[in-house]
Image 1 (cartoon, rainbow over the protein chains, first blue to last red):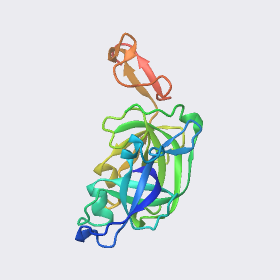
Image 2 (cartoon, rainbow over the protein chains, first blue to last red):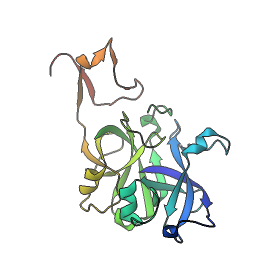
Image 3 (spheres, rainbow over the protein chains, first blue to last red):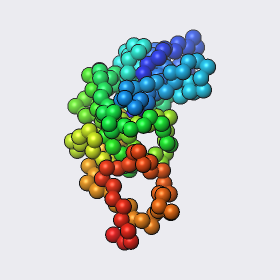
Image 4 (spheres, rainbow over the protein chains, first blue to last red):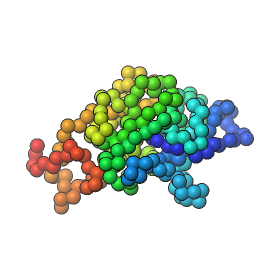
Length: 113
Length: 118
């Protein structure tokens, strides 16, 4: 489960029958800046290679653009929430009211995977 | 299981009904062994009442779901323990630098280097 921010919606004219009327949202995962503020991983614009980090998640909660959300990943998470028949692996689990990160505990922003 | 530090908390009221009454914590892992996302944090369900700033043991995957009391909760990671002390033997050091990616700026506060067998 990771934090993300809803940056848009996706509509399909023709889609797999099992998708049905599911709402799809475009979610950008967030990182935390040294001051503890969340920043979008894919915040550099549409031409950035970072937009490859965007996720398309099934939304059953009605999240709006700009809201921070909790997204779960994986087939088990999907089976337990939206059902095993939906062809997706990213599911929106919660809409975040607020999050707090202590900057002192988060000394640098770069990732060392 | 991975070692991480709780760096923050998340509050959410609109959420999947199976996630009700669960405490969510933002964990920054000290080492990723299988990063599935391009991010530097993960959200874990706190099972032990850990505080922000503490080193914790995070269980990723199905066992983390089982300890939530209901294996049908859509949980990816659970905090299983609060770390009192981490000891890494000096044999795991080559020329004084760890062979794994342990950063000087971000290492367990409970870490102790030991020499010889412990």
